[in-house]
Image (cartoon, rainbow, N blue to C red; front, top):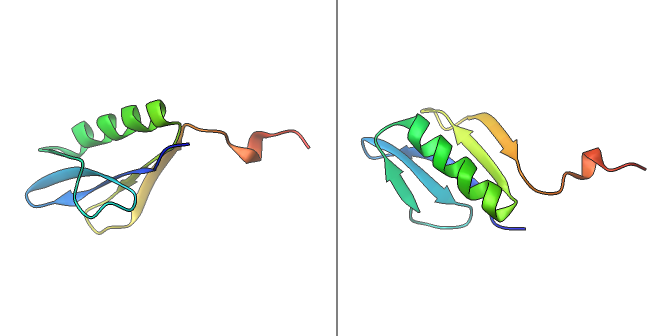
Length: 73
């Protein structure tokens, strides 16, 4: 499973930042563009995409890997 992708405020726009990285992976003018790219990366890496608002709080998350909550017991 790959590393999670976070969409965060960056300078005058938005950035996709890989979890644990100090610098952004990619930057965008709009949150929507950054969110679509983060979801695309997360799908390929079978990880999670997390969308943060301007205040830094988590707004939305999409999980694209193995979800243990959906495993039959």
